[in-house]
Image (cartoon, rainbow, N blue to C red; front, top):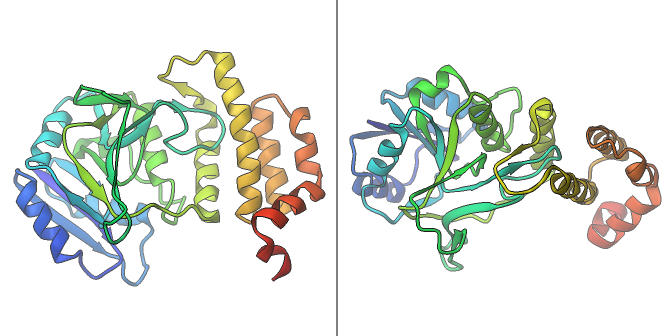
Length: 297
């Protein structure tokens, strides 16, 4: 009934996680662990391979550094996926996809997750919107810690292996689902603990930029109450943030100029960002403050 697909850094997932899934899922299931101990797969190719190996009509792609705290969570997912208009169900998402590269959490966040460090000590329960009392909330983008969908959805979407690496697969597959006319949701009636706070390196932003360029022709997409002018204002702010993120993540001057030129042109604000793309001194000063080792190594 439910195929659990995991890309593992080890030859197999931990016995703790395997037992946790078996004792809490509450439905007939299989666990498909993709052995990526030798780094032969990207997250995109690993998940597509998991789909090919799967046997059940519902799929749940999930990280291996998690722990389920709720009984019968699998039955809950199966019930939600029985609605043919449902695309992907996750546990964290956002309701705006701007034209500027952004994470799922850019605006109007929906979150139901316990975030911990690797030892499970710094545990924080994230729940947004505050006091939300429904089981589902519609979103556009989803975080990849858990992505559940019907098997038949793969007739319309798939993980885009041309992107490669281990980032932005969740953004791209979420947009694919929305673009094909399905609705994505965050679920609020079961708890998952994630033992990671994530790390956003240069590759993270490179993939994010690639995804937003790929879908630029259909953006922005909005489920919030923001007006078009407010979205534009938000996008300009995000573009400034992207500039600084590229500097700190050690993009070359050529890469920074190229990306800012592309995205500022989408907003028709080329002149406003001209000084950003032309001044080496500004970039030098940001790096001097934020990452001096890059300048003096």
